[in-house]
Length: 265
Image 1 (cartoon, rainbow, N blue to C red):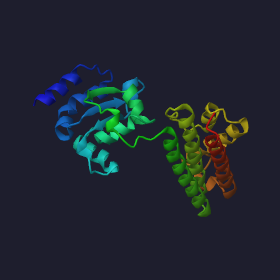
Image 2 (cartoon, one colour; image 1 turned 90 degrees about the vertical axis):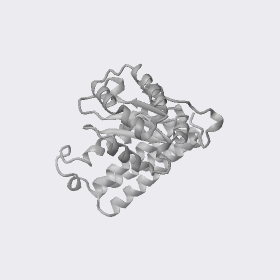
Image 3 (cartoon, rainbow, N blue to C red; image 1 turned 180 degrees about the vertical axis):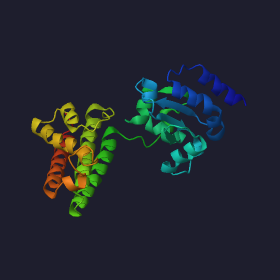
Image 4 (cartoon, helix red, strand yellow; image 1 turned 90 degrees about the horizontal axis):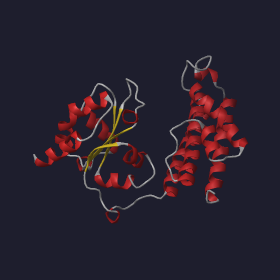
């Protein structure tokens, strides 16, 4: 198969330093080509940047129109069922049009295109053939929308006496609000962190706003795991604490919306 031979040549010209990634590609290269006929293959993350642990997963982008018509959440399962491996493989599976749109937007796909390792690089589409590319402001609205959804879930959890979940979800809402502003202000992917103080300081937020991010950040893990707080989370957190964290998330939202309305100086 001539096309497959050309693809194999591209792969063989690339030096893969990570031993686990090298074994994965050597073992599965032909199978991936045969089953999915990908246009592009990109590996990224810790297996590429040298920070992988022994048990770190493999981050992989597969671009193929074989995924057309398959719900996004089913694609990774389908890929990993057909290309099994002993470690977790976080396979992000896109059609060509989806990939072309996402690589033009702020986010993980664009970052992987810049920082990752292209095992296979087919023909890229010109701008005039790609539509529905979101602006940073439009992307930020998605983060705000999900943050609002999270905040509403935190209120529901509080009303149902699930105070530890109200605390954890309130932190998640606040994190999304701050990251929405980060996208617009810096035109870049937000840091992959749950530290609200770090995010607030990066955005030059007022000290009092950064200060309320601290208890949200600290309680995020305490509310999720029983080996951090001195007790079981659902027994440790009470209605008063949960309401305070929800109120703090609401204050962060108000500040972010104000900044977005002012054009994010």
